[in-house]
Each structure stands twice: as structure tokens, then as C-alpha cells.
Image 1 (cartoon, rainbow, N blue to C red):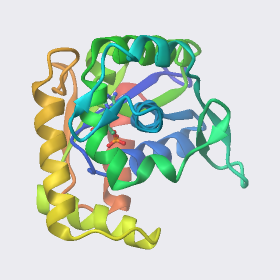
Image 2 (cartoon, rainbow, N blue to C red):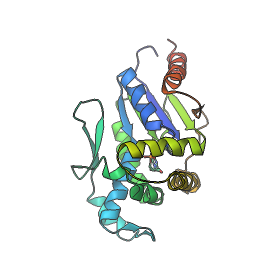
Image 3 (cartoon, protein in one colour):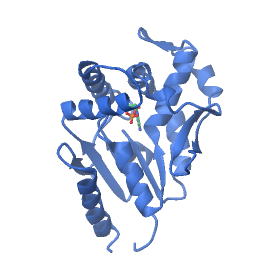
Image 4 (cartoon, rainbow, N blue to C red):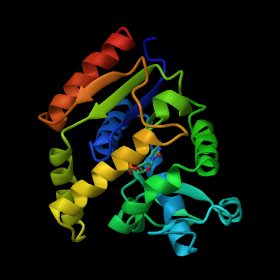
Length: 231
Ligand code: DC
């Protein structure tokens, strides 16, 4: 398989550093990186803006119309080193990372209609291979034939601390308790939903990065990649 482009699926719990990791891998291999969670977040933002989702739930009767007219995409960032998420051609990269969206994204993404639209779009993006996609169901549903699957996990408190730091660096306020509660709630919904629940694919390799630096994780990845591509 030397030099042949492959598909890399990275799944796992909320705030495990999947996106940072997937981005670094894509950069190293010169692959395309797609953050599938950003797509679900953009749909959730659209639902909030249209009053289709709020703390009391999601109005599923109004969803088909909203989904029909909704376009989620990505545009390159200014430095050309990554992507910014767009909703109907508007850049919403910051808006989709707020706690309000984080609190509603799991219920919205548990709905079959939402998943089917996003899954189709993700599979289309992966047709050319040479892609790293991170999410919850990439190795199980979106790319079940991916050559390399990683399932990421880490201690919830460590995850909450990392997420809080990231939010603070963007000027967003929250307490550790709020962030931890959100993470645990999302893990629960993502794991227990009926359609495409978060679970480790049979052929995925587990990476618990609770006590690992990014460099150590990259070293771990390189060994795995070399083994899989027989370098
Ligand atoms: O990766 P993230 O935390 O930004 O994802 C936000 C939410 O989107 C997550 O709680 C569940 C949902 N999601 C999903 O259901 N399937 C995916 N492939 C990716 C994300």
C-alpha cells in the first residue's frame, strides 16, 4: 500500500482532542481534514436560529423544510492551513463552538433525518481518499471500509479541563462544572442514541490520550500508519 492514499477515521468521546489530532495527521500526510462534528454543529446553529431547537427540545415537524434549504460547507482559512465552517455561505466557525450549541448538538444530531443528510455529504467528500475525518460514527457508518480507524478516549475531567482552556483562550466563559456536565451529557446521548451511536468499530485501535502529549500521540500514529501501509 506504499504511497497509496487511504481513508483515516477518527472517532471517540467529546473533547478528546480528536480535531487537533486529525488536523495534525492530515497535515503530516498532506491529506484533507474534515471535522464532521462541525457539520452537526452548523445544523444545530441553524436550528437554534430558526427556533427549531431550544432547551425544551427539537421541533421535528419543522426540520425537513429547514434541512432542505440548508447548506453546510467549508472554506479555507486565511493562512490556508485549515477550514472555516460555513452555513449557507456564512462563516460560522466561532458561533458553532459556543456552549449553547454544544448543549443542543447531541439531541439535534440524534435525529435520523439530520444524520442521513450529513452522512451522504461526508461520504461524497471522502470519495477521492486521502482524507482524515473525525467524529462519532466515521469508522462504523460513514467509512466502514476505512483502512485505518482510531478510537480516542480520555479521562472526563482531563477532557473538561482541556476544553475549558480552549474556550477561555477564545474569550468564552464557563465553569469547569458546566463544561464537565456538557461533556458527560453529550457522551451519554451520543452513546445511547438509536441511529449511528458512538461506539468503537471492531477494527478500530484505541488511543487513550489522558496522559499523552500531542508529540507522543503523533509518534504512536506514525508507527500505526507505517504498519498499516507496510512502510
Ligand atoms: O466533535 P464535536 O464535539 O465537535 O461534535 C459535536 C457533536 O456532534 C457531538 O456531541 C455529537 C455530534 N456528532 C455526531 O453525532 N456524529 C459525528 N460524526 C460527529 C459529531
